[in-house]
Length: 620
Image (tube, rainbow, N blue to C red):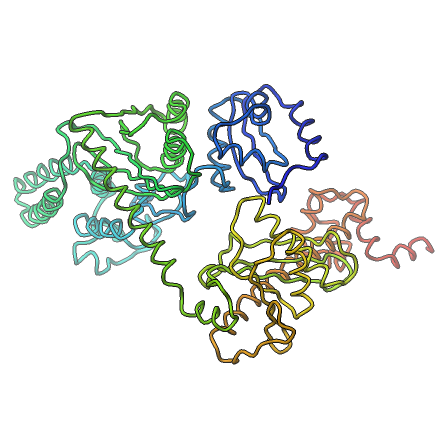
């Protein structure tokens, strides 16, 4: 089914296009459902955005994207560099369909060295502006924790959370006697200067400068031996031996001492794997990998640009060189971004032969193997559905295994603020990013059937406009009437083969398409439990949205009816009293003492909620 813009939408777009500024900035394209489908940046918003609507596009991806645009918005920036930074942030926030996106939005862990007199080593998933040192991100959490255990074995670093330095007297714990902590908590065991030396060695070790650590420790060992502190010298000797064993396992890949990252990628339709090999002082110390998604015809230079900006925005260590298989899109602008964000430039290299090219081939081989693993996992998942889905297919007489299920419900507790919800399950598990909620627009009163038809129609229209797959099973919260209303909405859209069922609340009866009577499913069966779980989740999501709308409406209407209360004073009052109900019950003295509320307004608020008090004052 092909969807096109209405005449009113076309007029609105034409008007907005005529008023675009000739300034740098970022633009967001939206579909008819309001979903952001693409985020881009421009040196001139006027020329760039207009070009989408005034010329023929060779790329099918761009043609599909433009045909679905019903609205757009722009953000003006001071420079193209600021636009690049804002573009990266908005892509991360909206995850648009036509942009290059990281496949998952989880935060990878970092090793954090805290900014304290006696620093600690922590595992965190966000970088804070707290002057601490961060190393990562680590996509291989197992390898990261192995590194952390190795550091704690080699270097005596405190692991407690005591607030040091402190006026309280502490006694050293077992870690001190095991040689895992120098005894920071007890006076006289160590000094901040001695501990800072240990932390400096840890930083060098994490930065791949193990040879420098060895040199320092060797000097320290001989100094202690000269002072005849043989026990301490033996401890340092053991540290050296432990580091040697690690170095022997690391692969030397170049003779120079330049820090560099080797970035390569492998593609399979819309799935992409990018691998970063981390070379520090000629030694390969680690590998990170990331899965991305992008439309099949997305240019390689655009993928590399998006990845480089996204990855190095949070990378704790910046190399001097980055090896790449192709030139990064907008090379000069990305170079400026590194200087503005990281304080120094980075050299981009595209090796074509020799040892450097072999490193790039090694990274690409890793990327291909990891992508093949991902595709194999996806294929295995498709081949082996969970047993409960097979049971559901059997019990509901479905032609297709219901790997994806969308469930619709209506929340309509009164004549106003009726809402609908859609929850989405894949492989029997909820997928929150597939959830949708709707305000009922076209139905007045309490007509559940018409409301269900509206929600189903709008939801499937949203799927069609955004090129998304229909669910394998549509589950309706209700009985035969609600199911027929939903099917009617689908038929109006030309969708006649959608598998659908309804689950009534009263007796948990299941109604199917084309069957006048409900089918019997044992109450103890896994099929009914799954249907109940999906139905109840749709109900919970709808009710939560409905309550939220009602609560916001009550608070807004009550306070907005009082002259002199704007948005800022409304927030002040709600922050002070917690709710409109508490404001209504507040004493005049409490209102008079509220910050930022003038005396006359406090009296007006009190009289608004206590009209009898106003009458008494007038009588007096």
